[in-house]
Image 1 (cartoon, helix red, strand yellow):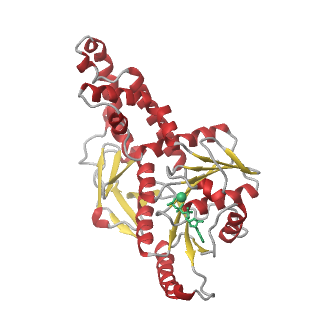
Image 2: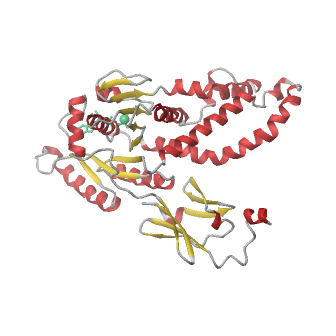
Image 3: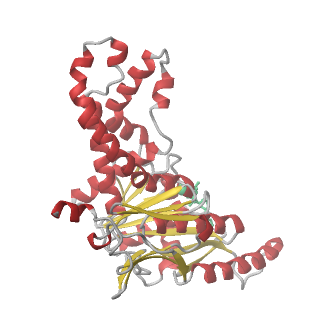
Length: 407
Ligand SMILES: Nc1ncnc2c1ncn2[C@@H]1O[C@H](COP(=O)(O)OP(=O)(O)OP(=O)(O)O)[C@@H](O)[C@H]1O
Ligand SMILES: [Mg+2]
């Protein structure tokens, strides 16, 4: 199943671009599902049709959903919520507060993503289009499984080895203490959700089938935010294959008092094309009315894709490369707009940590590199290079865990 995710700053036209893409895909014969994970839905406004939490038919080959995050949350998280409620109750906090406090920010949308796997497994669709909430939220959302999975491994082990054996004797203690021990159902529920999220992350970072497209306007703030978004998406291994610049005034037409805007847009457009190269930059014009309803979306899609198939890989370059020469092994990571001074790189065991701003990426290293210290990381042509000198450390380094196991 081809997955196309559209993201960008608030109001730039994500929903319209997603909906138009879905319409085009369905016309080309792809059985298409468009799913909005933005809690402030506007997909139904875009299609001018009432939509619900289950697929509604929009036209031949096209279904649409506006996920109800609270339903999905209840389904997946209620055992965990019950557990936290007990803790809060024991501490004298109750009522609505406990419900609010057991949901991390962004989590509602995270649960919406669990549906992706369901629809992939159903075999009912060839293409899935994701219309997401504005950039910040979505990035946090998409990176959450990666950020959490590291911590979760530790938590899982603790619950497995300490909590489970202890939960029996402790349950004989006071209710208050017992309430701090998560029950099996809560632990299983956490386990299950994180296993599922791991699966979703794999689907979304599967560079053969899944790509992200960035929608923006030719305005300073929109560009800045999109640059940041791209860097983080790169960091997390999502493949971005296209940039769409929406709402451009036609340079060949008189724009009245917006004439000055035209110049500003053209200036930023040149910056976008230079900065985001070699990613293809698609230019979308500002229409004289809103893009609402199937007819308008069809026209929007034709202007957007012409004769090309929206499901094509518009740019095909994996964001992570492992390069090996005789002397050197390099892990290379494309980070389009990263600031080198903000990046920290280190290795622990067989894991390479790349820290950037408040985000962290963990790359599991190939066996041959475990135990080696990385050399000085450097930037070249938008790629972060982390070199490992295969010879220099061999004599001095401590045996790695595989060698230890082998004696
Ligand atoms: N190229 C365009 N020309 C004219 N109107 C447009 C264009 N693109 C989008 N619009 C209109 O702008 C409004 C906002 O677009 P849309 O809802 O697609 O943005 P969004 O990025 O999804 O917003 P949000 O961040 O709120 O989800 C809609 O009314 C849409 O019809
Ligand atoms: Mg939208």
